Image 1 (spheres, rainbow, N blue to C red):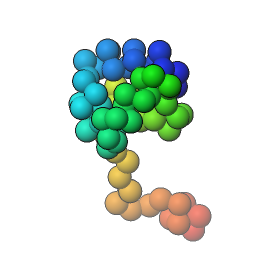
Image 2: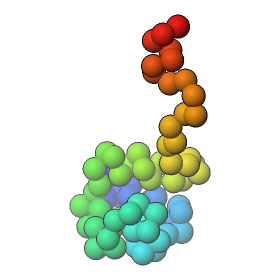
Image 3: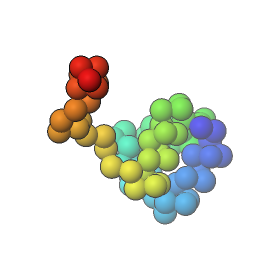
Length: 71
């Protein structure tokens, strides 16, 4: 994620550095660095998830890989 893209995400979300830091679980200083230098791809994915309202992943109650392999 480029610095420009990260800044555009902040603007789109109406987030301050503190808001973004809270949502991404990072220090505000790191948010400022992303705005200057860009952010890793994993942060870009997290930004996309936040922008679309995607909740944090939760394991399934039943099933999953083990159940599918047994079938």
